[in-house]
Length: 339
Image (cartoon, rainbow, N blue to C red; front, side, top):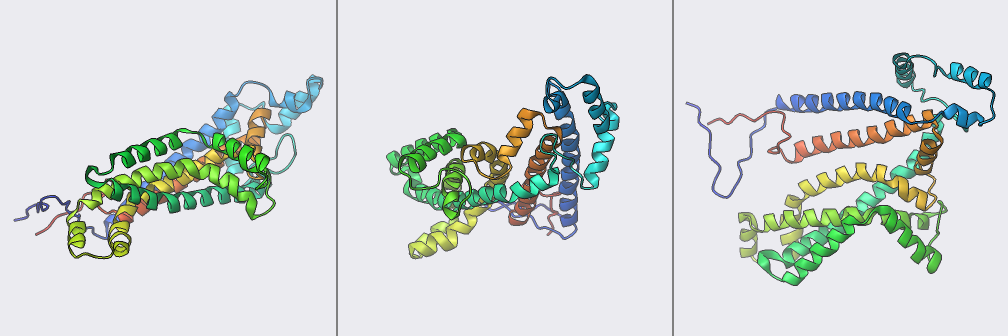
């Protein structure tokens, strides 16, 4: 007779995984990614066409003859019905053709190739720095305030990290620019001229995510400090570095690293305004210009690119969480319990 084993008091039973669940888990999330990408493609096409105004009139100028505007519209296929335009858009997209900018006549793929590495470098560096600062800070805050000790430290930690999360990245960028670049002249104010150029934009992007991760790391650490294995480690009088780095740290990283992966996707899209503050040669300035100038091909490609990056990163984070935390709710199916 098969019975369900009960978890010991104060513990959570770890489900026993079988190999056949792994393909189901991967297939379910892969299908979700494919559907999300399909919705994103249609949405990016529809959103651009819902923007009011005539991009061709803006491109050719208000004094351009109507015949020229009509000819150019026919050449670009903008006179076709929307389903026909969508079909052409999908065909070009599957062929790797993202179109040509209305204003610079530059292939959109070249624009992305030039700016994407610089945008990704900002987002990745900001994520790594946020994790490197936030995890030790959150653990320190938890150890200091464990079991209600040092109420003042807990209040200061909560207030400061909460305020840091609430301030937008571009305000951090403006403040850092005014103080350290224009005021003190310690760092380059704009552009990419060397390693020092990364300091201000990366810092502006990393502050809010670091505060958010620190709050999460503190909560996770407080939960782990009350577990049996930590009480046993304390009873053995292990040195602090081994107690916290070897025993505590690995068990607090699952949720923290998951949040870090999700924040990476947010930082890629959130870097648009910060890039404009520092005149960074990424995709931020081109995105803003494309939207304000109604440059359809560039704007469509940027929306699609940013959305696809976020979806792919979330997909990878889900897979990582499924590997690191088999008992999470993201499991493909409940594991069978056997005698």
